Length: 146
Image 1 (cartoon, rainbow, N blue to C red):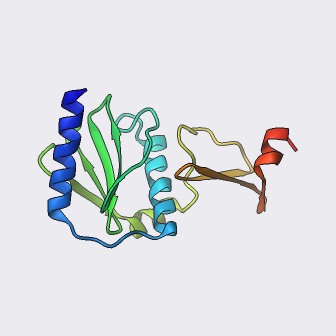
Image 2 (tube, one colour; image 1 turned 180 degrees about the horizontal axis):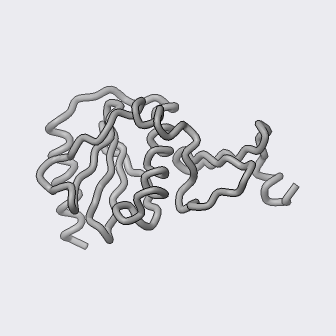
Image 3 (spheres, one colour; image 1 turned 30 degrees about the vertical axis):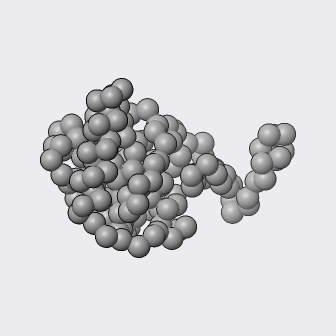
């Protein structure tokens, strides 16, 4: 436990010393959630077991204790740290716009490796928007099954 906290503080310290940034937009946060979820769905060997997105300005990140790997985003860029990616400094992977151009904005919800046809679910923090054929469902509709 102490080792993970120390590692987290070291990561935050390294990341904070590297970057000065402005706060992200709501759309940017939704894009980051989609990218992190997509990474979990497509690279489970690195990002297993859905993790909550944390925020330590200017970073949005997730940590995967079983692999010791972080995935992070700042200034429209995606980085990884730990495991086979090294522990010295965050490794740049791709820009957010470039990755979204490849995977799309609706890239799935956590641990949803086989989504149901006709439904789209997008998670933004603690809110999941579920749509079908362009129609939004309210929470009451989902709970009641209507």
